[in-house]
Amino acid sequence: MDTGGRARKIGILTSGGDCPGLNVVLRAVVKSLLLGPGIRTVGFLNGYHGLVVDESVSLDYEAVSGLLTRGGTILGTSNTANPFAWVDMEPGSIRSPAANRDRAEPRDRSDDALATVKRHGLEGLVVLGGDGTMAGAARFHKLGLPIVGVPKTIDNDIRGTELTFGFQTATDVAVDAIDRIHDTAMSHHRVMIVEVMGRYAGWLALMSGVAGGADVILIPEIPYRMDAIIDKIRHRGQHGKRFTIVAVAEGAGEMGGSRVVRSMVAHSPDPVRLGGVGAKLADAIEELGGHAARATVLGHVQRGGSPIPSDRLLCTEFGHRAAELVAQGEWGRLVAFREGRVVTAPLEATEGGPRLVPTDHPMIKAARAVGTSFGD
Image (cartoon, rainbow, N blue to C red):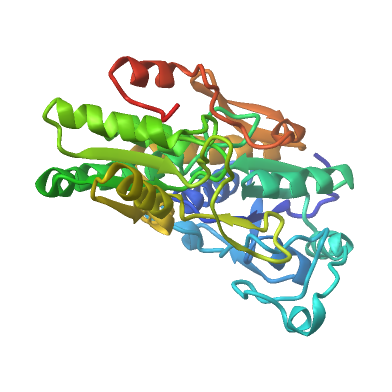
């Protein structure tokens, strides 16, 4: 690529919810570019917020050393900073001063983001994020900004890839919690409910539930019936099992009912915050079945901590592949995992809503075969 004699330089940012492995991808991108083609990297702070207001740091070799085991993201992130529907607020704020006065009107500041890229003399951007982040990346690419996307989310629900980094570590955390709760469930002869994240997709609940030996797994893709859950608990009791473990996705809903919404966040690309289905289930099980029930919400515990080895490996390969795309000038691509290997796809492959669990998924069939109930 002709750079007019200038040193080659790209930008990178992490956007959306944090997850294990973000720092590992940063490390792999920066080191691969520096040690290979000699391309420098500028990191933008707090997701698209830093790109719009031009807050950045230089990422040299030393800056990314020691990140292999470190959770979170050294660049910070935001799941409310949308350059195409911008509302003035600091990262982490619930609302802006203007919104306090009277619902500030979002405005398009994508031109400011593009100006930041030009000001720094960047060839393009590497963007790490989920479906909302990738939707923004695809829009920027259509405006002429060269972008490579790397998909992350503990929910594993991004189209275009069969696996996102962060998911395997979050599953490991959830399984560890279910394992521990088994002890209390057996000791107190109770129904113990573990509520995991996942938004509208049930991948996290399905995989952690199966690996943790949950007796009932409830996912958004299969609406549940309370009588089916009560029947399962009673059936176990009749066979000498005086406890039951329920793994439930935060987006699971009762047949004919609706999902449980914890709160709404104004000016967010995804304003709905799910949560509370575990407590709802516990109350219903005690009222309808007469069984003592307790709910544990894992929440943000699933997002933190050091990535497990399988995620470190995936992140390193994802980051290296992104660096290769940058070096070769292959923009508008998404690094993806399909059929057991790392490949690439168009950025637009992420469009079309979340990637849901097929109701005929082999893991669902296997779980049913060993006696697991899905509440249907």
